[in-house]
Picture 1 (cartoon, one colour):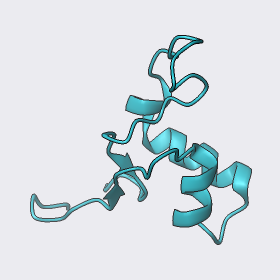
Picture 2: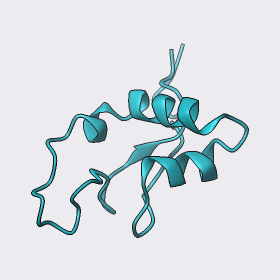
Picture 3: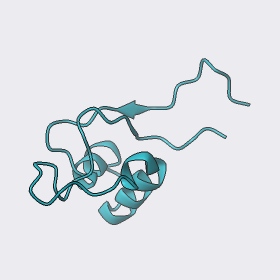
Picture 4: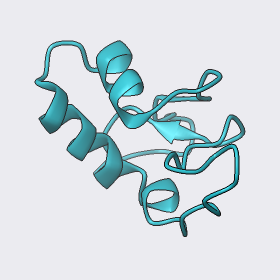
Length: 76
């Protein structure tokens, strides 16, 4: 059973990180498509965020530098 002192591994994104760049850095032993899908499933709070406006600097990329991105699965 998980206890409160166990911490799930997470990161803050770097500059213009995308799902692909995080997957390559944090899950290098997986195929890119599989790693991106896993990261998105662990981070629905980012993946399901409404898209930025087309004229926004974040257009096409929902990841913000202030986001917490989980790079490990949820603890059971």
